[in-house]
Length: 87
Image 1: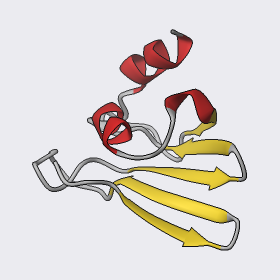
Image 2 (image 1 turned 90 degrees about the horizontal axis):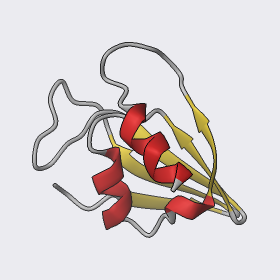
Image 3 (image 1 turned 90 degrees about the vertical axis):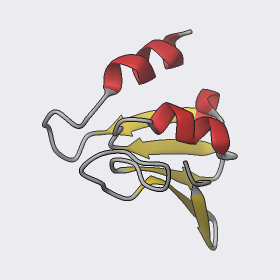
């Protein structure tokens, strides 16, 4: 899988963990992005392979304060992510 892309805008940082794909591949994953505001991280959507992309990025799982779900259907894989955050 490709390395997550990070873009900085002033005090705001966006890391693209997935940019939409019908099926995860070595270069693309389902939608997911991490928004950093100061020390807080907000995760938007949680497509398949988001955990792996987080491990490749400089986003720290322990810093995730909020998870936003913008839509619901089978592509969202929160089970593993929530289990990881609870530990």
